[in-house]
Each structure stands twice: as C-alpha cells, then as structure tokens.
Length: 450
Image 1 (cartoon, one colour):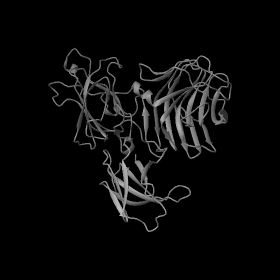
Image 2 (cartoon, helix red, strand yellow):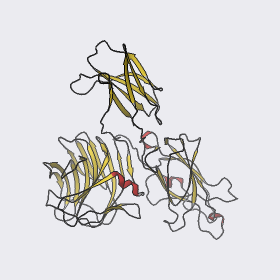
Image 3 (cartoon, helix red, strand yellow):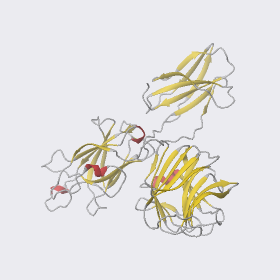
Image 4 (cartoon, helix red, strand yellow):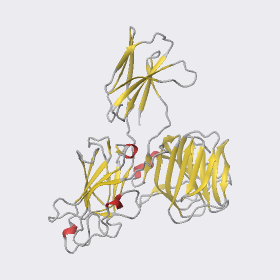
C-alpha cells in the first residue's frame, strides 16, 4: 500500500490524490466493531422496515427483517454498503446461509451516495422470479443484464459466493457452479455491499476481497514452519499441525499441553504468507486465534502468542489467549508480521483425570492482510531563487519514499517521472527551464527499494 500527496510548484500547496485501489480486506464478523465500516440504506417506503443488521453470538453478520419493496426487476429492500473501501479489479468471496426463500445478493461498483439504485448487483431468489440475476442500475432503477432461471440457492446451509471483476468482465459462481461470465459495458469501480429483500433470516461470514486477481492471497495461515506437538496424558488424535492452516473448517490441532514432563511445552510456528498475506496493524485488533476447546466439547485452554517478521524471530510477545482470542500488533514494534508462534499453556493435560490434550487451534485469521495503514505525509514545498525544496515528515511503517514530477499542463492525466527514490525525507532540485507548470508528489513505499 502507498500513500501519495501532490504539491504544485505554482500554487505551493498540497492536495490529495483520489484513488480507488484498496488492499486486501477481510471480515469474519467476530467483533462488533466491524459493522462500523458499513452504512445501511433501506429503500424509502419499504414494507416491514426498518432492516435489522447485526452480528450474532456465533460471529456472523445477520439480517432478520422482512423488509421489501417494488416488483421485479426493480426489487427494493435493504443494503449494507461498505463505504470505507472501493475496488477496481478485484475478487470477492463470502459464505452465505439463507434461511428464507426470498431475495439476497451482493452489490459492487456502487456509488457511496446510493440513494435508490447504483452500480451493479447479483441477486438470488427462490420465490417469485426464481433464479439468479445479474443487474445494472439505469436511471435509479434496476434492469436485468443476464439471468439463470434454472439455478438459485440452497436454504439452511453454508454456500460460497465468488465474484471476480477484471476490466468490464465479471465472473460469478455459487458453490463452484459458474452462473455468469459476462461483460458489463460502462462498468466503473466503486463500493461493495450486501443486499436483502424479504429475508426473515440470512447470515454472511468470512467476506474476503482482494485486488490481486492473479494471487492466492488469503487471510489465513499458509504453512507450518515448525511444530512440537505432544500427546498429553490421554493421547492425542488431533495432532496434525496442518489442521491449523486455512480457513475455519472444523478440522483442528490439539497442541498437547504443558506439564513438568514437558518443560518446553507444545509450540507451533505458522507462516501467514508473503506480501499481501501478512498480518498488518490496522484499526483495533488485527488477528484472531481460533481456539475451539469448548466449541468442540472440551474446555477453553490458554496459550501464548508471539509474532515476528522471520521464522527464527526476534519474537514480540502479544499476550495470552484462551478460546476464541484476538490480538493487536499495536505496541509490538511491528507494523506487519508474517510469522506467529503459539505456545500451549494448558496444564489440565497433566491431570490424570483430564481428557484435554491441550489447546485446540483451528485457524489464524488476519483482519487486514497485507494492508498497512499509513497516514498521509505532511508535504511542504518552497521555492528559493532557482531551487525547489520538498519537505515532509518521517512516517512509520515505510521503507522509503519516491519523488515524482509531472507537467501540470497535461490535458488528461499526468505523465509522472521518477526524480528520486530514497530512505530519507526531503528533496531539492534546480527548477526546470520550462516553468509553465509542474507538480510534484511524494509516495511512501512499503516495499524495499531496488
């Protein structure tokens, strides 16, 4: 991720460069604060409103109002729009469990104002017009671009919706069944969100959006670096470290516990993955360790958590967890962390009457994988005699800065030229002979300079 500030040598002021290019984004809905990123839009005059969006005790996003409006194809209801981020080319996946037979869907390319209809949506219905429908907003109303009337959704079970947008091409599948492979003329990037109509009960989970179409970036641990897994006092049939990888799937690792016979305890080091998969320091807590002792019929067991940028450390201690636990990189000295080290603290396994083979780890989940939040640099520009001087404040979590210059007279866009790539702040140069107008920008880098 980069942050850019532009300054004009003619006006000697700075202005922000608007962008629609967000990093990886993940919501597991385990924390209530994740709803703060969304805004609710109910269709004016809808019946049985208002909508009722909330996070339930199982850590799922739910909507339970029977709100509805309009007739096909211009169905109305309620939208939960993620206004904090927008995407151009992207891939989206989400787990959905509809417990009613009416309509639900996903919005994309939406305008953040979203008065009546905006952008595009894919919707599913088991009632009225049964099937799947790809729609576009035209003159604040919805029209159907394509439909599959022989396919809709299953009720009462989890299914995964995949949405891939590249240029004006869109590919949509539900539970690996491709429904749409279409071109959307005039598609423009925008926001995403959820949409429901007359759904008395529906839940969403594990929303993951990434702009890296050609990568397998995810929010979960990719590989095991090392593992010291023990059998505990009663044996351990869940001793495969690979069970802690990937998304939550009911397959978990029991680490074996701690006791005097095992003074080094049970340890596990996991690799979250390179680049856009690392845990990064974002708003609030940054990642979750899903320990499912009580969920699997046992008890919640304690464990220590450490993070590092290399598999051999140095390690920063984040604290102790038990059960489903959340951790924050703030104060650790790390802006991002690729490796996580878990140390089992469970002593119940030393009790001969116990049936607990240590902490049960199902998954690690990064809430902001690969996205480092960097504040805008405060950029000042001065001109003295024939020299232009740029000065900006030093930023945390960056590896360097790139200074670029472009002619301010370009009719469409700017042809940026790199003037310097450096690790320190401040840049000066002799003013160009042609002073008809130039602008400068400073880009904060999060990757190593070449």
